[in-house]
Image (tube, rainbow, N blue to C red; front, side, top):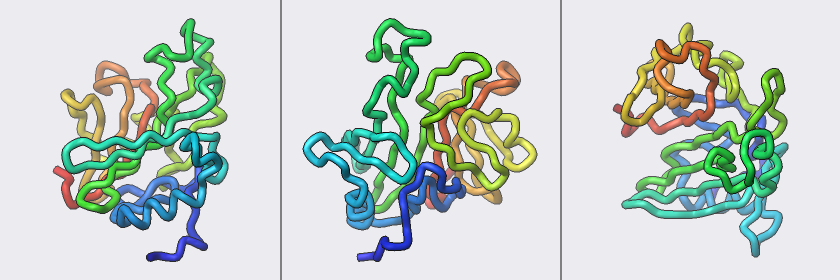
Length: 198
């Protein structure tokens, strides 16, 4: 079992396409992932975790086909700022997803972060994942900021942009096609294993 003494799951760790996000490395075994995450349990009974510089998150585990999903939702729904636009924190638009991990064939296949904070115009997020890509681009920045660095292809069916090859396996979610929404911001970022990239 790998020694995690010098590694951390961090809300400010860099995003490295095809390699890691939040300090969680692609290719890590399911057992190593479990041991790594267990260092951040703050309430075992309620499945609450807190990573370095993150808000408190609740883990929900699920399975689909051969994949295992680890979904960390923001525990304090007030951090989503739901009250700015919705009449209840349970509204679908007030989605608390913060961090997701997919384990496929016993190894970490992808790691994803979401922009869960609703904001007034001009406000800056305070609680979302703040790690950045090498070009200093992250959640809340413009999708178009990535264009000089990565060849982004829009997938209509999945409603996301993807980049593989030289830049690395990366998926970025905004609002839709860039031609239709040129000023859209990045609402989710996922780093993926290139072994199954298309």
